[in-house]
Image (tube, rainbow, N blue to C red; front, side, top):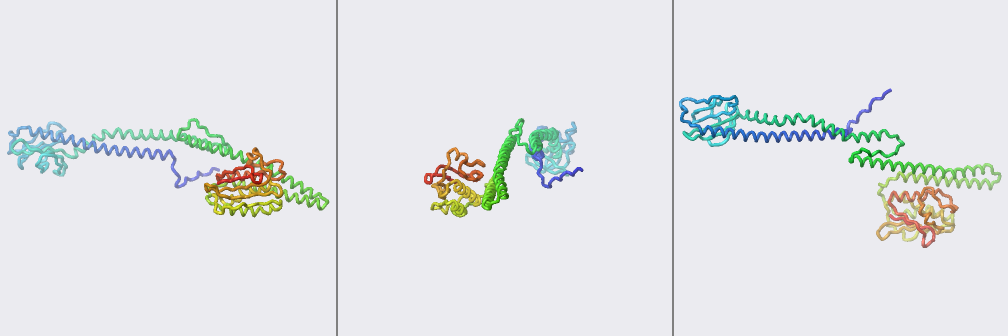
Length: 453
């Protein structure tokens, strides 16, 4: 059963090819229109100047002709000698008497102007362009005129001869533009098809062969995105495998202790097995909590611009872990002053996670009766610094370099753990551009961790 094609959204953007064609063709038509208007104006001016010169030249020739033979008692009419002759007419006036005219000239004066020069007039319902000059004798006025309509016909004929080739080339130009634009956007179409036909699990880079320089940054950015996704996918696959491996150990221990409790005949033996079962559940719960923290941090957005009073959070986290420290006869010491005015550009939940993991690691890997110091201070440049140091055995430089690797644990400590605490610390540091440095504590002899903002 075939499904109907999805309707196009009412405000869907036009394709790049359509926009380019529309823009370029519109610009071409506008340029053609401006060129035609300029050509019309220039042609009109040039033709008008040429025809005006022709009228003046005709008047000059008439002025040179002898007028003695003209009969003042009758109208003298010049004969028509050529088919184009009616385009230009003349009149000879003596005072208010018409002495001579061309055959197609009206009997009314072409203009009332008496000074030498050009004039525009209306005679017998027709518009005329007239040149006026004086004769050499007997106060004769010479009028040479031409119909404005004839001038417009000449201008239109001249302009048509210029614009007609341009008009015929417009379709060819539009076809050439369409062909060029279509070929220019074709690489984008090929790129879109290459992305659309890829398998969902394929993260191989796109080929850059034959890609135009304008499209190359897009292809390069896509390839970088695929590379980051491939690294992220590999990391997540490794993380999943490691997490499954780490969870198998406490689950197997819980199962074993539960079986011991089932088969125990002695009350004390059953109590020890149940106690070990509870501890295994606690260890599994802690591991799951850290895995969830890491999963949330991997999707954490760094756009949260909230700030947190570091000293206040440090007191709260230290108070939360005080019971754990007392159970192991350890001490958490808050070194004064705690710089209460220091605020850090870190959301409060992440600040709690960071401090809890730092203190938890220090307590976990320090012996009974050990001291863990926590200090919040401001550096000379005004930036905040958090210092956590303990009196434990410390770490060798090679082991310090591996801190932050997921599921890495220092062997031989006799402490249970997942090795995820430092992974969480380093992930927060990368997300919020913190500097985390480790070395040996000069006061307590154990590990010292300094976090700078």
